[in-house]
Length: 113
Length: 117
Image (tube, rainbow over all chains, first blue to last red; front, side, top):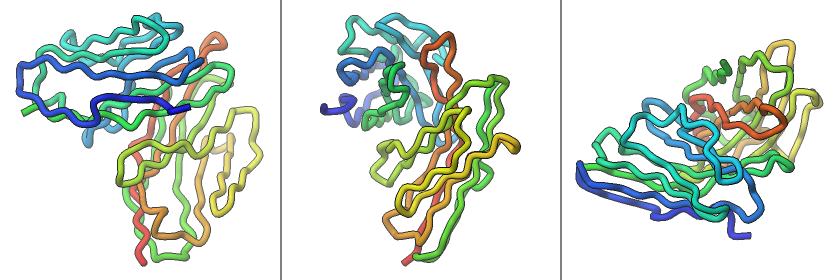
C-alpha cells in the first residue's frame, strides 16, 4: 500500500486566494482526520470523518475552512479566503477501527503571503 | 477533557547516552490509547508505538522502550545508546475511542531531541 497520499507537498499562495489541499487515505480505512501543525499551537485536530461522514468539526478554526469527503478514497480541505495566519503544515491521517492505529501522510506545507 | 503534557521542550545529549522522554496524560475515560510518534527533520510523522489502557506491560523494541504507569498517568519513552539518527521531535498522543469507534488524537507539544556526535 502506498500509504496516505497528500497533495500538494508545498503550496504558496497570496492572501485572499482559495487553497485546496487533497488527501487519499489508505484503502480500507474508514476514518480520515485532518490536522494542522504550527509552532504556536502544535498539532491540532481540525475535523474527522467516519465512512465519509463528518463526525467532529469542532477544531475547524473558522468558516473560511471547509472539508469534504465525497468518497472513501478522497478528501479535501479548503480555505477560502486564505490569510497569512493559515500558514502551517496540514496533515491528513487515516485509521481503521479494527486496527486502531493512525497513519499520517507526508503533510502539505502551506505558506500564505 | 483530555490533555497530554510533555514538559521537556528540548533535550540534548551526546551520542551513546541513554535518554528518557516524559509524557503525562489526563483523561476521564477508562478506555484510551496512548501513542508515540517521531517527526524527523524531513517532517513526516512516524508511528512508534500504541498502548491501550488495559495493558500496562512495558515494551521494548530494540533500543526503544516504553514505561506505562497508570498510577502516575505517565507513558515515558527511553532510548538506550542514542544515535545521531534519533535526533527528531517526539510526540506523545492520547485517543479516547467513543462508542467503539476511533477518535482524534490529542498531541503533546513535543520534545525536541538532539543527539550530538
